Image (cartoon, rainbow, N blue to C red; front, side, top):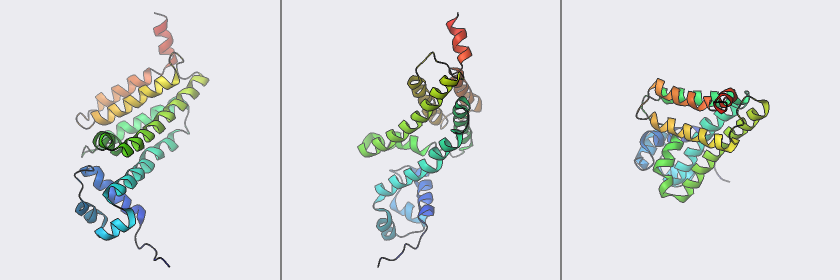
Length: 202
């Protein structure tokens, strides 16, 4: 009979998330992972496979604990409020990131995905999940009149995804509250049905 695992898998993955997030995939060594998780190399390989496999599990852990959790919390709000709350939390987290680690998903998109087709698909899938959240909010907001109908929901959702990615990258080099907040405010203003009507009437 197989022996039960003698470690907390979630705690190990959380430690691996912090390690990969701090150093990036390429710069993180197996020794770094051993030090941060407190496990031996043999135990890590037996439990998770190689470094690449552990990175995939750590990235999934990050997505579920951060992005998926955020969507689950804010999608209970009214459509436009949900979008605003999602983006406000992104700005807050970005400004609180004193080490300027950025978003682990965005880091994966820039550092790993371009060289690894499997990770490209993984990252693209998560981004599509976020875009679908935006699109659902916009469709619901267009239905109740709180979001403009002047543009297709899918186009507005794609724009919001671009804003999200831009804020996350920009915050690593210019973590300025006024700058990030103005970007988000402009994106939210583009959803305003009154603003689109006034522009159309000019």
